Image (cartoon, rainbow, N blue to C red):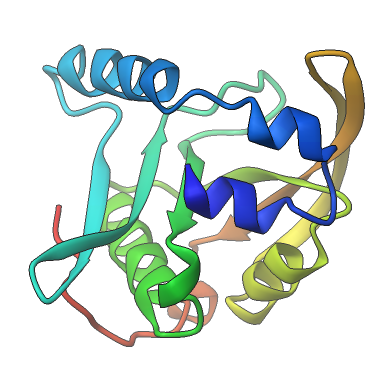
Amino acid sequence: MRGWQAAYSDILPHDFLAGLSIDAREVAWRTMLDSDEDGATPSWLAERDGRPIGFLAAGPPRDADVEGPAAELYALYVLPEAWRGGAGSALLAVAVDHWRALGVSRLVLWVLEMNERARAFYEAQAWLPDGAGQPLDLGGFVTTEVRYRLELGSRAGTPNRARSSATP
């Protein structure tokens, strides 16, 4: 939750961010993780010194116009105090390796259009906007998301290979 609040502090209204419920997000994530008996929606956790500092969740693409075989990264968050320490890159690399090994040829993700820091991060990892956009209503505040795509047809689309303690 703190990663979300810090990432969007200059983008989303303060009242909205302050009103986010950790309990509600925990229930949503536990439900998703507990229902993933077939491994279709894997998630990875980055740890430092035995303490969780970030996570990535992925699964089937939600958009009908994404040609398969494909997967979508649903969320990638790292605690603010661990930003720029390699956890995000490592999580992304582990997820890319996972989907590539399963024969997926493209990955997509959605990011807030105004989130320049996140967009620069993804672009540095060889992700590119694919031209798709959509409005996102966050309880009365409407913003825009843009979709990014990473083609996995060759090793050229492989993000930074740095490793950390990101584990499946």
